[in-house]
Amino acid sequence: SRYPYMDTRRVGIAADDGSPVPVHGLLEHPDFYKVGVSICHEDPRFGFAALYEQYQGLCADNNDAGKPANAEDFAHALTGKLLLIHGMLDSFTPATGTIRLLDALQNANKDFDMLLLPEEGHDIPTYALRRSWDYFVTHLQGVEPPTEFALTTGIELLLEKLAGAPA
Picture 1 (spheres, rainbow, N blue to C red):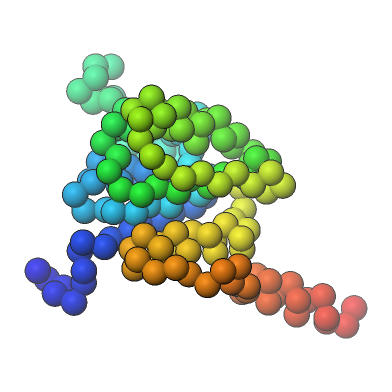
Picture 2: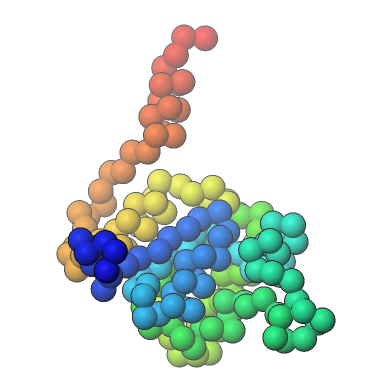
């Protein structure tokens, strides 16, 4: 109600660099988020504790009440559209988060989309960025995005400029 110009029936969430935010958003708040894109989803249990525990909180006396939530624990709650993208050369192997989530989604009989990039690591290539935007256009706007749109990012422009610079 604070922002009446926003269409809250069409809200998407995305993150890259291993952030579990889009997956948790879709699974824990399915009434709000309709579409999510997660690039290089990581499972916090297999990451650096200092990086993740600050967002999850600590377990209280080692009981389940204080246990941080893991994405696969909520796989049954998926109602929106989810695109998982992962580079196969990522130093955080897909098995640490993406594959565990895939398994949980399959076991819960949930539909999702997956894009594996065989020659990519943890960095987000332009192709993955374009496919992410296409996913939102398709599922939030309900229109077909341009086929094979040639997206150019600032990184590519910088590399072109550096390649053309005199030595």
